[in-house]
Every structure is written in structure tokens, then in C-alpha cells.
Image 1 (cartoon, rainbow, N blue to C red):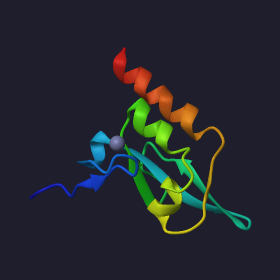
Image 2 (image 1 turned 90 degrees about the vertical axis):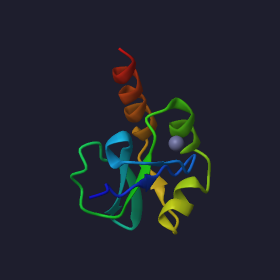
Image 3 (image 1 turned 90 degrees about the horizontal axis):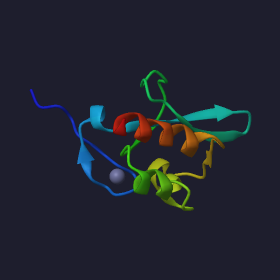
Length: 92
Ligand SMILES: [Zn+2]
């Protein structure tokens, strides 16, 4: 059985979910916040990004996350820093 592939929201490359970091869309009051979900535990709409500096950096571009979730969303302030920790961990 083939593993379903997911696309990175930044570079659009298709990967298995194990090779990607998950972003989850969480409602907080009136706002929709994109949070990191590295353990894939949050059951909500999700998107995926490569554990690469380039791709994580592109998440800050206006429009990338809005396009991924097809609505206006905000990014959790610590999200990029958090994901960058995953890159370093893979390098060491
Ligand atoms: Zn990517």
C-alpha cells in the first residue's frame, strides 16, 4: 500500500508525512492560528513544510499560509523558531 504523499506549502515538493513537519490550524477566540504540530497530534486542518531553512523561512511570506489553508490565518509567533530547532537536530 502506498503512503499518501503531502506537499510542502513552501516549495510544493511531495513527500511522505514522515519527511515533513506538520502545521495545524487552531481556533483561538476569533482568530485562526497556525501552530506547529510536530507529533501530528492536533486533529484539525493541517499543512506540511519541509524541515529546511528555505521552506520554513517562506512561511513568513504573506500568502503562503493563507493559500495553504484557503483563508486568512495568523502564524503562532514562535512557530518558525520552533521549526528551525528541528533542522538543527537533524544536522547534529
Ligand atoms: Zn519545501
